[in-house]
Image (cartoon, rainbow, N blue to C red):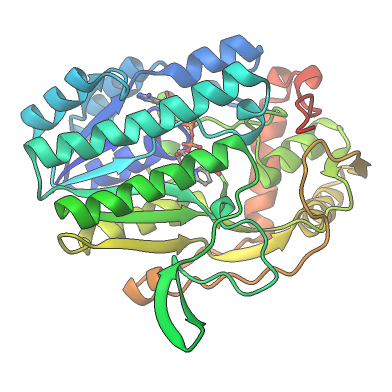
Length: 382
Ligand code: NAD
């Protein structure tokens, strides 16, 4: 299949591009590497050393004999996006290329506006390019489970059957997002849903949980193929951050009570899910929604799990409850349906002590690269 991975220099996109290339698909990456600029802006860097995108692609060619094409540019630039579609004629477009940090979007007005413009305009440009150049292309769009918030009823997969005053309909599940970033994803979902109806676009919206882990079969093969690991207070996410903290002797930073429950998945399952979505495309005009995660945990449960494994490794990890910088419920009901990808054949990698131990070992190997000053959260929601 001819497939574009937009955001292919990022944490999810890079291993996804290698995974499809390894399986014989014709892959192109679209990225403007702006994530590396945000790292500079915030004075942060990946735990693991990462090669430049050009070095990564050259290394992949040398090691695998396979070529991944690069379109270097910004999804906000419509002429660029249209050119990519006209030239490559993708059968599927996997869209990871957004500003994806909730704290980054909450820094101030500029960062909120940038996040929403970058994400919403980028996705609109992709939708217009599909309509005008390759109308049969399947859009596989990364959304987030954070779009739903934490309602006091089960979270369904995209849609809910509602009875109201004696009538009944299947309607989009209500969205109660947590941040300007999560709101940008909700705006994207609405734009995509509308264009599926109006123009017959085929789209799959993947409401992904928090991704943990690092290694995939392909990224392990050479240091130049290593994936990034964010551990800082802006881009770092729960489990990976706790493992780095345990490795370097920093307290495990639980925000508030830690009863915040979220959906999670292993990065290897991100790749499987994207592959399943690509191999079973949505129909023309269909706006398909999958909840892309395998397990749910509270933040405190994850910290305790990392603490247990760290102690078995002889590390004295302790948990610190910080004042919560976010506005969110710290104790709540959470039960989200996630059967559609399992029905398509997803074989989950459930969270294991071995994976946590390997993450701690990786962080120990690169402990000299860890900057303690960027670990604690500095951005607040209030
Ligand atoms: P990332 O920041 O590591 O990668 C995003 C990539 O997109 C970067 O390489 C960046 O340079 C590129 N990009 C951003 N804006 C662009 C633009 N306008 N034009 C071209 N390229 C652009 O993020 P990630 O962790 O790989 O996340 C990828 C996607 O998955 C995001 O949309 C995110 O919302 C979603 N997601 C991620 C997680 C997670 O835990 N990482 C969880 C749920 C959903």
